[in-house]
Each structure stands twice: as structure tokens, then as C-alpha cells.
Amino acid sequence: MRATFGELSDRIGRAGELYARVHNIARTPDWYLLKLTEELGELTAEHLIINGQARPNADGSGGTREALENEAADFFGQFVLYLRANDIDIEAAIERKWLRHLDRYIELDIIEE
Image (cartoon, rainbow, N blue to C red; front, side, top):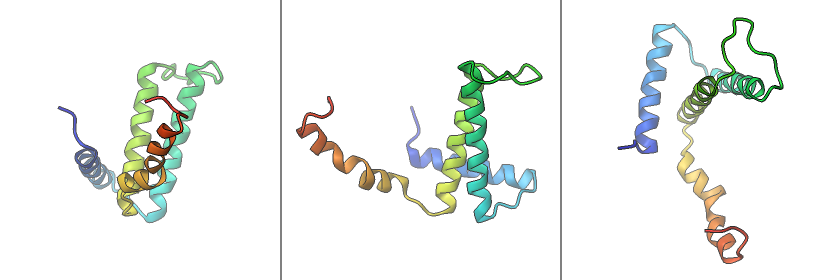
């Protein structure tokens, strides 16, 4: 059985708390956004390596599907931590910003169901 977003968010939050404690990281409000940016850079690097648009890492690591997925997981996890730190209800925001248009688009036959 898959976890709900709320359950996943709670587990990611706990993992983030433990990681910060173990590594003595002070997570300031700026830290969350800066770390998110760092993880996007690492995801971008893996994407470029896989697509032959960047050189592989000097040690030969990276450039695999698993490395790309791991970086995507890091980015997503850090995004969840950012949301939690800033009290952003992403489900409500997605509903308000994106999904409220879905029924109208379906009615207009702009997208397929």
C-alpha cells in the first residue's frame, strides 16, 4: 500500500530532522531554499550527464538511471521540507492554482480525459 502525501511528508520531515541532528545542521529559513536549489543543481547535472550534454563525474559515478532517480528523490524530499518549514499546504495550493481549471479544460476539449 502506498503512503498518502501527508504520511510521506511526515516521514520525510522526521528523516530531515534526524539528518540535521546527526550532522549538526542549523536549518534556518534561508537554508531550506538554498538546499532546494542545491538539489535542483544535482538533479540537473545527472539529467545532463544521462543525455550526453555534460561530462561524467571524474570518479565515474553518476550518469545512470538510478543516480537520476536518487537526485529526483533528494529534490522532492527537500521540496517537502521547504513546504513544511514554510507552512505551505501544497495540496490546497495545487487545487487552487492548477486543478480548478481541469473541469473547464475538459469541457472545452482542450485535453483528453
